[in-house]
Length: 129
Image 1 (cartoon, rainbow, N blue to C red):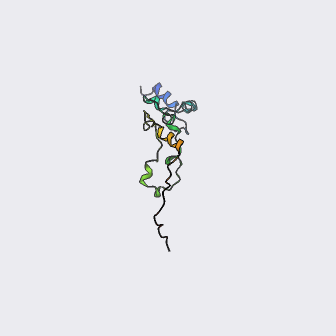
Image 2 (image 1 turned 60 degrees about the horizontal axis):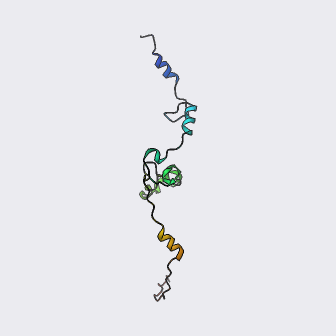
């Protein structure tokens, strides 16, 4: 067994990954193109969902988050900016959606905003002099 090589080792050595492909599953151009053509995951593919709007069903549609467009220097970032730094993913969007009723908004739109017609008797504050 010292001079003979294992045939599986020879076959494995022939399928070396080509340079330029960074995915562990895509080692040749055909499998890379097949991976690119796959449709994006929806929330309903992973979870049981009920009455989800399309923005929650397709979380990869969200744009404009800090990690996607930020050109701010890291030295000037605050801890408050970490809350909106990453866009929502499949695991962070809600799986059930209960929209609020629109009756108040519809009545307000029909009647108009409240306007105060009372007399202003207060003194104006003194400006800087």
